[in-house]
Amino acid sequence: MKRKENYSSEESPLSKEELEMLKKSVDSSEDRSKLPPHDNSDSANAIRFAKKNPILVVSAIIIAIAIIAVTVLGIVLAVKKSANKPCTDDYTIYLGTESYTVEYEKANINDVLFIDMKKIAKFAGLITSGSRDRIKFTSDDDNYLKFENNSEFAVINGAKVDMSVQAIVNENECLVPFSFAQKTVAQGLKIRLDSTTNTIKITRQLYDDTKEPATILFTNDGFAIIQAITQLKEGDIGLDSYNIDITPYLQYIAPANAKDYLILANKQNALGKNYVPSNLVSLQSELGIPSKNASLQLNKNAAYALQAMVKAMVADGVAGAYIAEDGAKKPTDSLFVTSAYRDYDYQEKIFDDYVSKEMAKNDITKEEAIAKVSTYSAQAGKSDHQTGLCIDFITDSMGGDLDNRFEDTAAFEWLKKNAHLYGFILRYPVNPNGDYDDPHPITQYSYESWHYRFVGREAAVEIYRSNMTLEEYLELN
Ligand SMILES: [Zn+2]
Image (cartoon, rainbow, N blue to C red):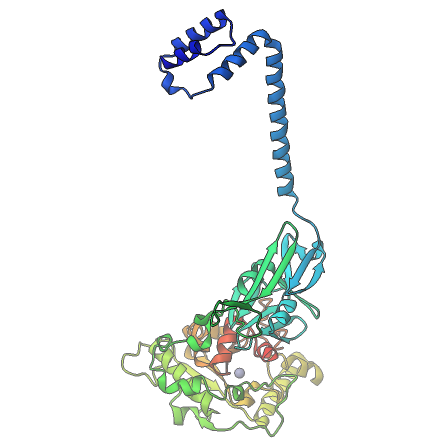
């Protein structure tokens, strides 16, 4: 065997007996080829040394094992320590070449890293608007982002987006989760975090590939919000979103002069005695819309949008069959418009009647009665009905009383899902505390499941998707 020959041919440093022993051990291996190769002369040296100094070798092995063990333990502890204790330095945030710092504790709230969107928006050239606890950032191409204090929802182009963590919005800043800002905010805007040094770098870079070679440039143009969510934009509601032929109605549902339909009448904003809406038409005689009173009128544009909506409700079997067309389903309940445009004098009469009733019923003063009636009826000049853009619905199943039993009707369920597609909103939503009788903190009226206001489709879609009131929408637009 070659190996044996090697041992003998070399001038071996081993004694004759050592060599014999080694030969025996090699010969006893049944299949040497299965063992890893090793340096024969070194092995031999080691064995010789071991034979001569057994205690020393054992000690060396123990020391080596101990050193390895201590080293491994050290590494494990170091890794563990670094994993448990991240960098707690203050954050340095670069916006291009400018930078600012934020204390570690201020940036991390309940273990979530926050960043100020106000600063990013300014850097990105977005227009900032809004109120103290609501803020909107708009880009040149009309993409926008909105945040509300204590809300975990952001609104991006009318769509509600869950951030999982509440934003903090106040006069000075708009703190949003860093991860949300990073993945949502912009194209042409890079937001990077180095968590070992707590450095955040925000840069605006675009490759100009019209040049050879392509150059990086900083630009104020071309900024876009990444989740531009085109599929959620108002303009993307397709013809197939409707169960009737909507084409002839589009000019009314989504009017070109959309702002004309955003008139606000509320306790703070009176229309005045002389305000009369333009283009009033008769709902029943001119448009065939089932009405409790033949004299009911509405602004022409809102009336045609309403006609489309009632047609769609009839087609779905949730309204009366008055204007049913071929193929309409059998209605489950008959729907009527019970109130539409009300002029100043009429509203004054309604309000005064309510006041007299409350005084008689509860034995209270006129002032007390006015305060009570104001939670459910408007004083003249302050009624949404004077805009000529809203209606109250009632169905047969409600037994003649206009109240929140409307919520139990199929018509209500339908309106809840579809009214916005026709440009209508639920004008007086439930107080967020869930109490139907408690006035809403923003509209200052208690819940009216029957009252729908035309605002045009664009605003209606946004109000619907963002769960806003008309007041809040107007504040932001
Ligand atoms: Zn009403």
